[in-house]
Length: 186
Image (spheres, one colour):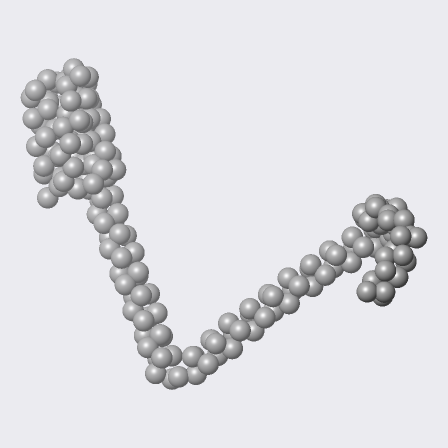
């Protein structure tokens, strides 16, 4: 008990001070004002160094895992065969598209040639070739539209026929046009 009384007496002589961190503010401000730029460059350098280490660790891990799996000769051969099959399939698709394009070009050329022959024959007979020209232009327009839409697009054909009726073509012209469209498909 006597020891407790002495402890109280010692504490009574010292006045308690406010224990906050306000005394650090001038020290920190002085340090930052003198060494702030150096501190900033060091922080940026450390961040860049950490990113570099992460990238190199990721590439080393992925290259070591790839190196381990690619040494199996059976998997290498299987992979090469799959690549070759894929290339062959893509080449066949490209060849089919090229053949289809050539066929469409030939059909267009044949249609233009046929239209020129019809115009020549109509002028030889003394008929007005304006009607033939309108029909030829409509047919050429239809062929161009046919290339743009998907095969079997009946809605597109109906829309095309409606547009032509609005343009003032007669029903006989439309019948000829429909016949030429059905013949050009086959």
